[in-house]
Amino acid sequence: MAEPAPVVLVIEDEAQIRRFLRATLGSEGYVLLEAENGQQGLLEAASKPPDLVLLDLGLPDMDGLEVIRRLREWTAVPIIIISARGQEQDKVAGLDAGADDYVTKPFSVPELMARIRVARRHTDRTEDETAVFVSGGLKVDLARRLVFTDDREVRLTPIEFKLLAILVKHAGKVLTHRQLLKEVWGPTYAEDSHYLRVFVHQLRHKLESDPARPKYLVTEAGVGYRLRV
Image (cartoon, rainbow, N blue to C red; front, side):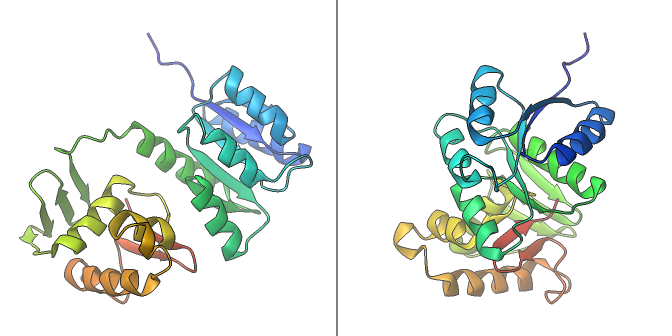
């Protein structure tokens, strides 16, 4: 029996954008649920739980950040923000509130589909500590705490490995500076971005063939870092 088509909930007040997404995602085999405001979106998500949410921040009845916070009270469904707000602080606020990714309008169809695939892959990925992550020449064995680049073992300090392991577990997803600092060093270090810059610099010099043009550990300017898959 074929698997049911994945369901995407679009919370967007612009009818033109909803029509565009209906045609685009429908042609890719997705089923769309639509809501034109935050309250309607929350009701849709609760009554017919989707596989992914596409959310505009500028809704007529409530801020999209509030929608994210309310959804995160009861569901871990992937949330991708689609918004004309392109400022770094908006991206950071959305990701810190619990969104998985951020696409700025206008966006291309290939970019959106790629972000959707990554968000759904991350949800499907188990938290199995025996998993081995592979991306290009980078190989990370979480259980044995071993790291290789192009089949050459790389020695990491405990902090370096912890930082890399968190990026691996969220591979393809943007993690903000605050999220990484809290995960690696604890809540009291959430504003100490200097620590993060130093250790990302060290990791790049150990993992990247050209640290100035990283293939794996990618900077999202003003927001955070993403481990490319």
